[in-house]
Image 1 (cartoon, rainbow, N blue to C red):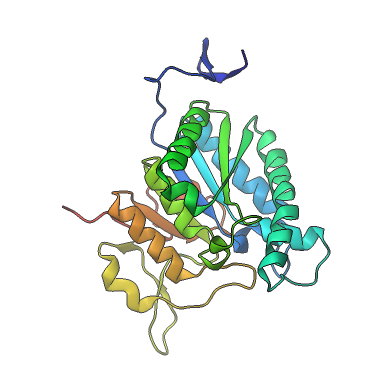
Image 2: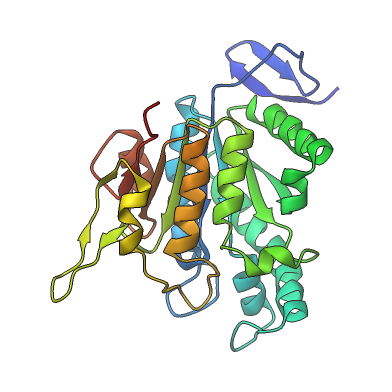
Length: 279
């Protein structure tokens, strides 16, 4: 019978593990298209992919399970198909996703493989999350994968067959639902913004480092979003609210800056930290 690599020396964990075997709560990381595509284009930025793989692999080697919720399939498909821009119609986007998803996963497999990490792909729709039986199936699959310190589940919305997701945030809400489903220790949304920025007329925007009440900062939300992304700060804050309501601390940080993941977990003052309300 095939086996997953050991979680401890001299201990092999069968793929069909016993019911009482558990992994520590995972960290869920969400990568938006804006930090995965090359600036000004749709091709996957391999430099970014390599850096992310190195940083995440380091955490996993320290015994911290990670789940990656990754956008970028449509952007990758635009590049593979040689299109000048992202299609506006749903079927065009779905075709790009169908072509781009294998390219995206191939890039992740190469980058994580450098550090002895095997990638596992899960394509989900919101129906998979909100239908009890399908949610349970996805949850059990993730639990099994997380037993190995050398496996990382990579989740994306199933854009090639679903239509609802194409009109929702760029995997923001999905990442929150995955974090809730897996009782994550932390949700980290990596984007092109250095966290949530305070809005003030005639003043350079200032990063809000910590939020204790999310209702107090909604006035600072701007509707802007990138050309190749579907989300924006509004969808991110909705995801944050969902995670916080389940007791999961959440961060929004700049995915273009090195070592943001490490700094967040080390308690450094980067991005915006959203604290779980007391009581």
